[in-house]
Length: 244
Image (tube, rainbow, N blue to C red; front, side):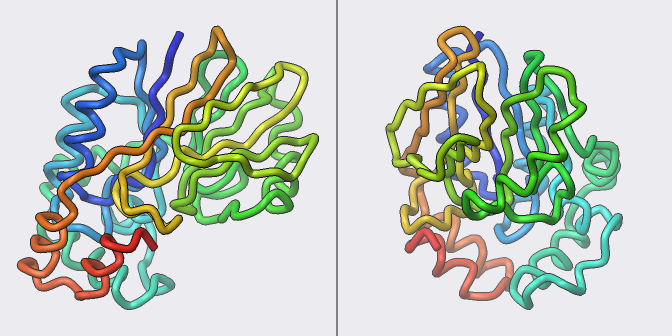
C-alpha cells in the first residue's frame, strides 16, 4: 500500500492543486493530511474544500484550532495572527465546523501514527533529532507503533531512533526498518521553510517500507499576489519566494 502524506497546506491553493496533480499521477492507495489547512495564505475555503471533497483523513493543526476558535491566537507572531484573524472572518461556517471536528491524531496501517506537531501536542515542534527522541515516551504503550509522521516545523525531516542523521533531501528515498522507530516530516506543502520554495509532500510505501521526499514547483507569484490583495502582511508573500 502506498500512502501520500501532506502537511501544512496553509491556504495555498496554487501549491495544493499542483501537489494533488502529482499525487494523482502516482496513484497512491490513500492520502493522509497532517493538519494546518489554514493560516498564512489567502484561500482557506478552497483548500479545505479540496480536502473535504476527497474525503482525506486529516488531523487538526494549531492554525486550524485557532481559526475555528478552539485556541486563542495571542501567542502567534503578528503576521500569522493577522492571517488567522482575517481567515476567521472569511471561513465558511461549514468549513469551520468541519475543522473543529478533526481529531488530534490518526493511527493507520497498524504501525503508523499521524500527528501535527508531535505525539504530545499539536503545538510542539520537532526540529532536530533530540526533539524527536524526547517524544519516544509518547509512543510507548501504543501497540506496534514505530512510525510517527508529523508536520508543523515546515521542514522535511527523517529522524531514526538509532541515529541522528536527518537525510531528508528532495528526491531521497529512505528505507525503514520494522525493528526501529522513526519520526518523519514530509515538509510543508503551503509554506516551506527549508530554503526550497517548492511545495513538499511525501510518499510512504507500507509494503517496501520506504519513504520518498517529493518536491514540485508551483505558481508562487499568484499565491503571493493573492496575499497582498487580501491585505495580509507583505512578509507572508515575500517568504514564499525564499522558502523560509
